[in-house]
Image 1: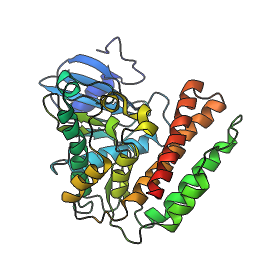
Image 2: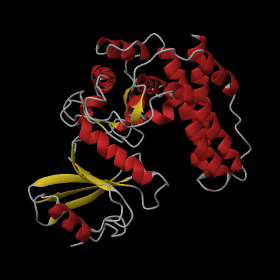
Image 3: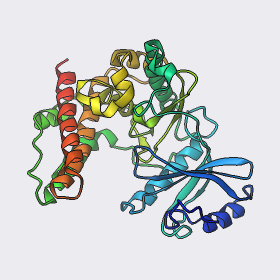
Image 4: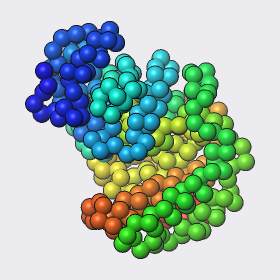
Length: 348
């Protein structure tokens, strides 16, 4: 039976029944069906069927051109990480064929009990700065676990294009920024420091690096924490994962770390304070990794550069009437803050 509050164009539970039965999963009625919120456009629906709880993930109702490919990649990475100890949701089954569910790839994963620290803090975490400090350290520790995985050994040796990954980054994102000029009403990128940051990145790129699994969007909003302690329960939202340089994930964490320039990105935990410094994050990562962190500043600047350009895209779309003006203005301000942070990192 189709739950009344779930649009059948998103998830047809009749189709899902047949597919799950074909996968040999437990049968029975669908119970406690609810749509989950989050910081992603992808659809998340939690339900029970028989003795087991599931979360279904699929692209948004109006998918982007590469949404299905992103979900296929997510499912493959989650399957590869199963049993490694990396704190990722455990994949149960995936349907890479978009013709099964009306044009959308989907997969089922185990439900993770945890909270997003940028949207809410339970009393334990809100009331004790020592707990929040450990939460920050745990973010770095969980990332180091991911960076330590041998992607070839877990079956991801043919994924992505790691060759020339760092060399492509500046040109790739400058081209993305240039593409926004096609949007009517966008006045062009008015980003102080843009040219200076791009030139510095090209001139200071690390000469050597080692490929590995990258989450691609590693920050506090994409972590779920345990309700009972400071542990990271799961790293979520793997849609930007690839094989690249894992140190860019650490740079991303530092670039988005709560501060004046990124206050809008860090929400509840940023407002509460008590978090460790970026230097402490780096120390935790270094203690659990054999990667060379001597060029960490470059990775943090690169993360500011890339994320700033990504957020500027929403501002450009807002100028063209394709996104809300208040959201576009907010994200443009965040872009300016990220480039200011990049310049600070460079000068330090």
